Amino acid sequence: MLKIIQRRLEPFLEREMPVTQAGFRKGRGTRAQIANLRWLMEKAREYQEEFYLCFIDYNKALDCVDHEKFWFVLLEMGVSKHLIILMKNLYTNQQALVKTEYENTGWFNIGKGVRQGGILSPYLFNLYAEHIMRKTGIDEVAGGIKIGGRNINNLCYVDDTTIMAETADGLQYFLWMVKEESAAAGLKLNMKKTFVMTNGPIQEFHIDNDQVEIVEELIFLGSSINIDDNCSNDIKRRLLMGRKAMVSLDKLIRSKDVRLATKIRITKTMVFPVTTYGWER
Image (cartoon, rainbow, N blue to C red; front, side):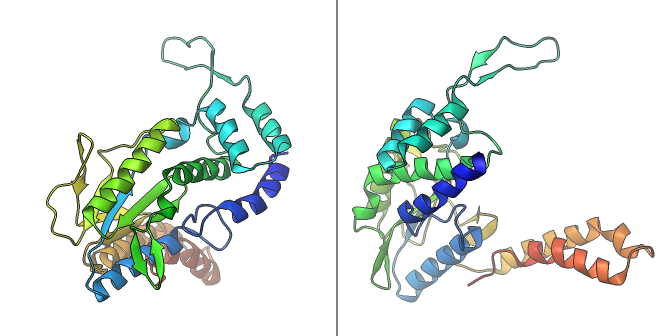
């Protein structure tokens, strides 16, 4: 039944999701968002424009989705009522207990969170995250980075959200809107893991009473991004990861019982992707 619901949801998601959301969509993925971000930073430097990026981290996002709010969100997003009823039945009367070293707790009802590992969970959270972004009205505000006649102010991969602006005030306003609407939906930003990157002159960045750390380099969707778009650190990091992957296959590579063709195939499968990840430009 989950596969059937998934097939029904996919066309709806493709129709409703903006081009800036790449999570679990055909022909899109983390590599596309890495390439998009590098390209945006490269073009901003080429035209000598300032850019301000904020990499948002949510506090246990998938565990904090309130079920009652969630069904309302799906209805508001335009999901068919019969699909909502089917999914609601999957989440109704869920119970859990906690096992400890000494004894188990009593059973309690689960009223939050999408199912970890469920095939529908990424799709459902995509809708929830898109609802938050629509509520902010961020796509209607002309304060993002202008490239090729387009105004781009966010890049998303499920709950990994990056917002961007040409000014510090613009970014502060975007972040404030996302923070407020996320809180209304039951999600809380993890300000200790939310970072700002900019080529502008600011030394500090605040939102409400929280200070957001300004960084020159961070890991974005598994790839090292820095303010200068200098890829040397990421190349070194990828080569090191590839070397570690190769070392883990050492016994297999040295084995005389494994055919050369098999060794080559395993190496291409387990080492090459690790080394070359994120280099689409």
